[in-house]
Image 1 (cartoon, rainbow, N blue to C red):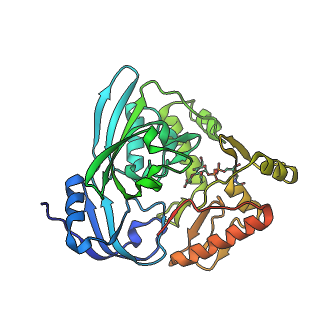
Image 2: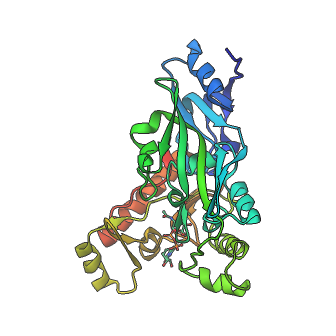
Image 3: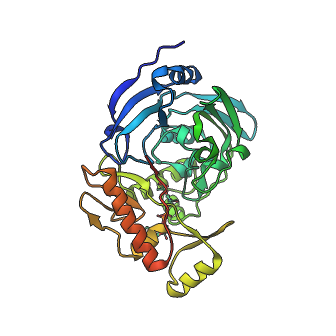
Length: 337
Ligand code: EPU
């Protein structure tokens, strides 16, 4: 059996992009199934809770964590297949997401360029089906390999078995007890560019027209203009999901607010939570050490030294204000631990 180094009483502040100070009773880096088997076999951790924290970019820590934080560190990209149409890459969970995007853009592999600049690791991408600028990662995923801690078996999930939805997958529900080891992507070699979202086409044209690298540059610059850099201002990207309401509710709101953005989705009408928060008068609102970002109201920020409880209190304030003004309930998108 492998020997595993567990760090005790680990400070998590440098490991979460919200920059919240909190400690975990244990922290362990893992590479593969053998490491996980050894960790779960260790009697001092049996029965304790555990949580996978990789990039720490979609998590709000609300206190010390009495359990074991599992942190993936394997970062290999392996080409498993190539035909005239596409390349298939198996990528280990511990690679930074944007390093993979940069690698694909450099090599001419399409499908991930609109997802440039998203913080976090590859292993977390399928969990919440990351999405931005008209693309969702589900459209590129062929398979996800995950370790089932209850059986010790590594299971492969096909795209359909991942049951992807908007910021959702089986790994947020029945498969919460699985630790993702690798993600396999099938990426077109003659990509179809998607630049229809918001200002993307204008930015891409200004860069000389659609190409993988122009789309990447355009997305990076739009993100830099709107989204705070976690290295400068603690945050977890969009704090809330964009709510989906019925067509009747959307129509009633549009009567009062004709300029409200709406997007038709299979389950109803998706509203822009950022617009709702903005119109509730909260963009740039500050409550002590936390606030609503001044350029993108969907992002809550830590001005320094905030606790998770302070962020949650602000989130509640936002939820109440939006419900009172629009009758719409916002639900957090970040994982609250
Ligand atoms: N808007 C406002 N005020 C604001 C923010 C937004 O009026 O303060 C309006 C915008 O003008 C636009 C609409 O709301 O008409 C949508 O805004 P935006 O295009 O910025 O996107 P979003 O819906 O707020 C989603 C994702 C982001 C992703 C962007 C771009 C969610 C929860 N968020 O935000 O993802 O980068 O689209 O595709 O779906 C994340 O998940 O952490 C994240 C940042």
